[in-house]
Length: 346
Image (cartoon, rainbow, N blue to C red; front, top):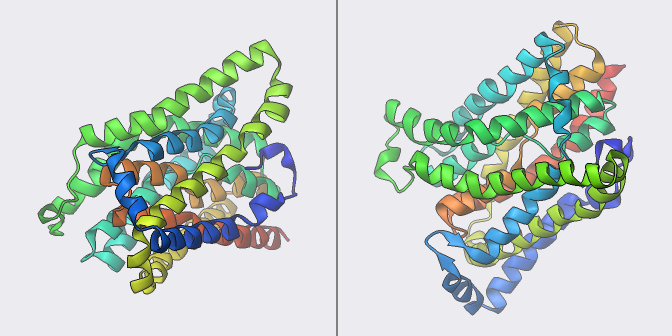
């Protein structure tokens, strides 16, 4: 993945990310049909809902974006309290509530898909937003600070948020979700977050602290981070291949499900960006700050969403399948929003 120092040039790998994801999906479906015994073999390498080959891949997938975060920039966010408060409101109240509403509206009777959408909405962006922000001429340092805050907030609150939005609120609204297998405990979520976010988070902080001391910050940001960044894409595609290999027959039988999942995701991304940009203008934020806040609010950490969905519900679940559709929709939408932001700047 690209870094905020990349300027307004999107690398070939990032530019074709949607193509790679589609190719991984097709490869997974093909392997599932050609080698049906592979899914059974993967099942033997699992404990409960945890597939150990995938668990290692997901942790490695999460490490580069967390190693990239400039945690030392966190304090800069607080210099402008209005912008910080607005970003906090968008990321940790409006975004989760909007995705919950869309999930219930579109998939009230398909609880597993609704939960997958909610998990996406709760995973605030800490990776690709730096790319979108850079392409749209946003404030690079402020974006890095917002990313750092989101990373810290996810460590502290992601467990509680999933429990509240997946178990507590549906129960209060009598949605009937308690009669399904989708009733999770805080202990289940905490364990998943500790493994798939806590381990790479600690490794990311440790890498930045140790390697900047051993080498330099310039070497770390300009040499080390670009070297490890491809791991995210490699293991994201690896995970997608395995998941679609297991779900291939179901996908071929019902391709409209993918389209139905894409619709609320499209509404979510467009709404979050438009509302954030409009409120930034009304709040008289600078254009670079408005862009940073808008993309941070509209983007999501699909790596974390996939990791938690797989860990909690299993690699063959519809929850995990829904989480995989997230980046397929998000990437082309964000590229469109980059162009829209530049147009609105005029």
